[in-house]
Amino acid sequence: MKEKVQKVLDTWHSYFSDEKKQYSEYEPSDIEYFVGCMLYNHFAFTKAHHNLKTMDLSYDFLSACGDEYEINKAIIESIVLKNEEEKLAFLQEYIVESKAKYTKPELYLLDRLQYHVNAMAERYKRGVDVEYIDFENPLMRK
Image (cartoon, rainbow, N blue to C red):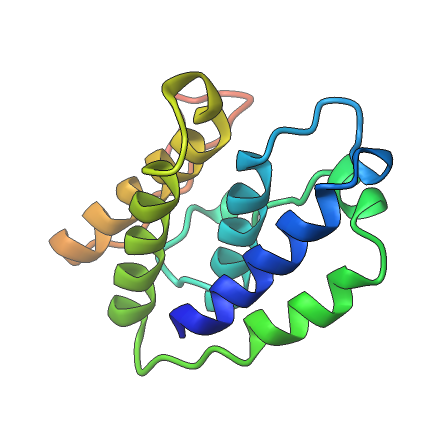
């Protein structure tokens, strides 16, 4: 599994090493973040918050990554784990390893992803389902 993810990371780091292919606010850590989002989307966690069933990929990233997207998406989709707990552990380990590559100022997106994934991990740990929150009236929970 890790080899497949590393292949995707290597492909995009190599691709974006050409400054002409970078989008305006490109940071190398964006690649780890977007691959993390792709993993998250592929794993389709049942305990994900209702409005975070999938993580949106940035238009800037998608428009800049060229033909590599479909190839790398297929690699990510070929990752098969037994259950959601294994998927969650795999994603959490991926995030920790990714964050170790960068300095604090470069971690904004990875920190955001980790925050959401760790909150979801708490729901698995406690065996509770996500509550529905009405963001127009946050006090209303279903």
